[in-house]
Length: 112
Image (cartoon, rainbow, N blue to C red; front, side, top):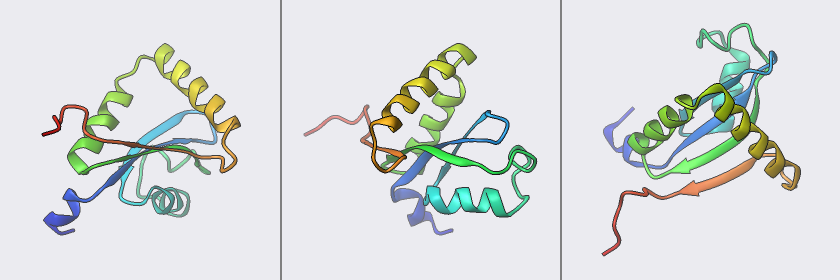
C-alpha cells in the first residue's frame, strides 16, 4: 500500500460474530473486509466465529484518525460496549439499509 492511501478516508467498522461477540476493525472498504473475514482464515479472532455480519460503519478522514477511533471503541468497558451495541441496534431498526453509516470529521481540527 502506498503512503498516499493512508491519507484517504478509512472506515471503522463493527461486526457481529456468530457467537454474538463484537469485532472492531478498520479498512478502506468495510464490506470487502467483512467478505475477507468470512472467506479466509487470516484473522485469528474471527477464524472460528464466522459468519460475521456488518452492523456499523463510520467513515473517517484518514487511517490515523480511524485507528484512534477503533482503539477508543475497543477500550469501552463491557457494560458501556453493550449499551453502545443497543444504541446501534436501535438505529439499525430505523434504517432501511440495515447498516448505519456515519461520517465523522476530525473533532480536534479547528476551522479557519
